[in-house]
Length: 131
Image 1: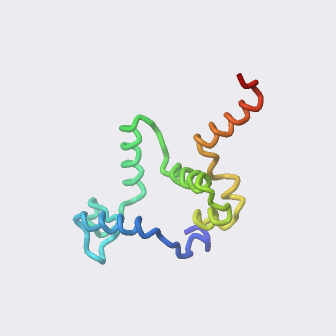
Image 2: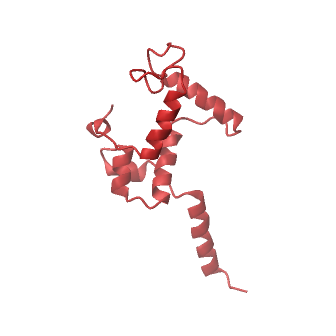
């Protein structure tokens, strides 16, 4: 972990927790002491490595037709989604586990595409005469 903020405990949504429990029960490494994301390559003794996750993510991105996509894009998407549901920036900072709010505000996220289209439409309606 890079910062003290990264080490803090984080609450998890009950629905997500139940979904993760269901996934874990369906794996070959479902014992309580097994890793949540146990690596089949390591026979469950270790979690998936970053390289394993990255390669799987790249295959999925390729199949979806979106090409080279890094796993870090998930963090940017998460920030955008937090923003689109009206989450205060201070809460976003904590959920993103940033020690400095400027990182949350200046590096991650952007207005969602639907929000941008709606805002642009409002401006266009102001600028163009109504018929």
